[in-house]
Image (cartoon, rainbow, N blue to C red; front, side, top):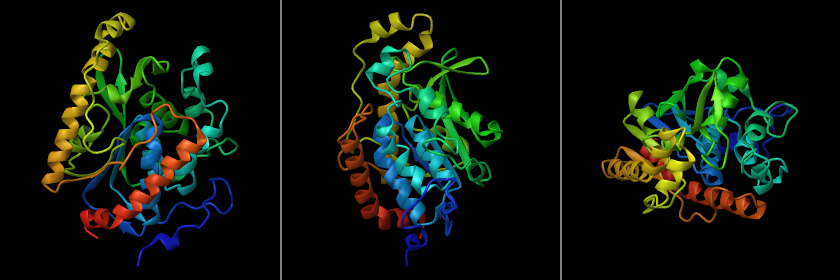
Amino acid sequence: MTTSALAPSHPVPYGDPAHTPAPITRRVDDVALVFEGGGMRGTYTAALVQVLLEEGLFFPWVGGISAGTTNTVNMVSRDLWRTREAFVGLTTDPDAGGWGSFARGQGYFNSEHIYQHTSLPDELFPFDWDTFKSSAATVRLGAFRCDTGEEVYWGLEDMDVMEDLLVRCQASSSMPVLMPTVHIDGVPYLDGALGPTGGFPTDAAVADGYERMLVASTRPAGYRKPAEKRAAAYRRMFRKQPEVAEAIINRPDGYNRTIEELEQGRREGRVYLFQPDRMAIENGELRYDRVVTAYEAGLAQARRELPDILEFLGF
């Protein structure tokens, strides 16, 4: 018998008297749950979060980069309502972004608004900080440090209040060129996908001792990132931050190397790689109809693959 019947049939937001975190009925012992970034492509893997929560699954390690941080925090706070609305509902927010926002210097995605002004109880996507902060899971959120070229991972130990979490999610998700640099304690950060793995916090999972991983990718099987053709332009654009330019230029190699490592791990039985059957939206998509269609497609695939995922997890 599945545990999905235990989940509310109509999830409600945190702050509503009927809101409760999705119950934990199955604890995974030795598998890290890893979320790739990808902007609005994360809509597709958000649907996987819904299915995992409906099944009552608890993972001992959950990590994400860029849009993967949103899926990470919703998984750890066990919020079925926010899991969907943080992506699908975002398209109905007039302050979320677009080229007008970019022209005003706020970024194509208005990251300050999205990450710092939507999560309080009276805002669009209220966040259950107490459930998140009290989780027994190890949490890792990755961002790129612009001055040194390092990938930095933050955990629950780095976040005393919700604002500490929100600004770190913003930093992890701030795509170069399209979004402003985010400063934390005076240090400049950009999208964690600029790090050596190209957008997967698999290195953090390994560093924490995990060999087995359920990896949620936002690219279909067989995808490889093409070589960067605008290297000179990026070096001019980021002449004051050369580490950023080199990270952009080197990202395809890092991304493709990580995918090949994950495919090898799958062949060896160490990795379950969830990859979209088809990705019909780009990372900047803000049209409701296309985003909700991507979510529904992700939901259908996640439910179809659930038996295989459970077998991989040992259930």
